[in-house]
Image (cartoon, rainbow, N blue to C red; front, side, top):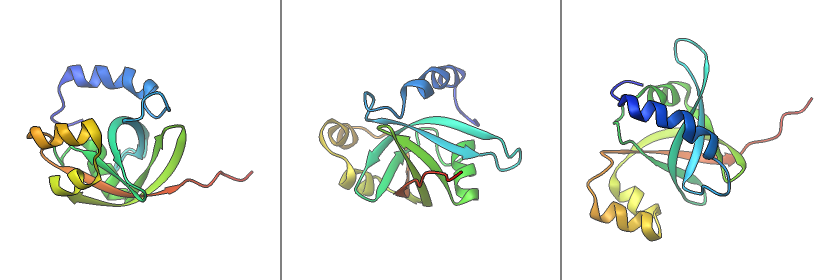
Length: 132
C-alpha cells in the first residue's frame, strides 16, 4: 500500500479477521484483485452504507493500491455484517455525499473533523451464490 504507515499495515492484518461480521458493523472486508499480479487481496475498510451504495473514506488518499485496483477492475466484493456484496461503479465523491449517507456518531465525526481527505462510493448488490 503506497503511503500507508507500517503500523497500519500491521493493524490491517488483525482487523481483516474482525471486519465484515455483524459484531463490527462499521468495518467491512473489501476483496479486490491486483492490477498487475492478479493476486486476490482482502482490505479492512470502514463503510457508510446506504440502501444501494457503500461510501468509504480514503484516509491515505486516492493513490493507495486497493483504490487503484478497484477502479481498474470496475468493482470489488465487500463482506459486511455477514453478507457478501458485489460492488460496482467506483466513483470518487466529496464529503457532502458521505455526510448525506452517514448517521449518528459517524455523521457527527464527519461534521467535526477534516478527515478523511476523500471518499469513494460503490453501488452494491447482494452477491449471488456460486453454483456448482
